Length: 195
Image (cartoon, rainbow, N blue to C red; front, side, top):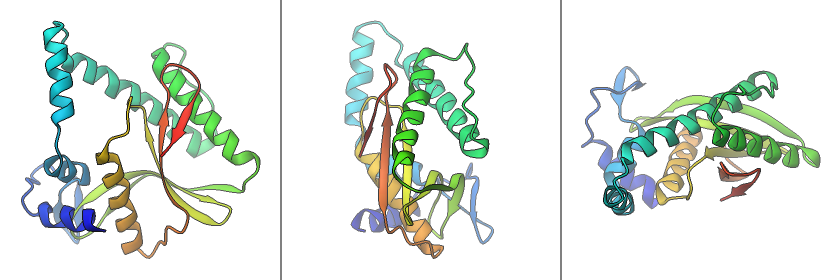
């Protein structure tokens, strides 16, 4: 809760000219934008610096990673809409691994549990900020926020992001009685980790 209070306090100092989120007609910032302004990016700066020393353009790596994540998310969205398991064969191998990692996770939780997808890729908004939740699941009658990540590590920003989604859902009267899951999907083999 302390993190959410910090986000709210910092929300007023964020430039919202490009905001797509509106609360009662008033633009509010993206929760990820607030989090990025409130947290240290020192590890990313150090990584970018190390890439520069190796004469590697860190923007190319960042853009490729974003594309891999986007393709994986699009396929999870198609699966959530119509239970489709189709992924384009010419998609990057990392996207295929990440999507198949999701399918592996979903099949495992569905084997011995009653699983319903209540929301996926749903924009949420409150008075202070907005964001788009990856998924809200009901597993054995309890609600769980699931945020899919294809990054190599789980950062504090991700924890704050799901805390903000939980806050917005609870403001809407949706009680998260199961919890939150950051689902790190492997891009190099079929595997996943829950945080």
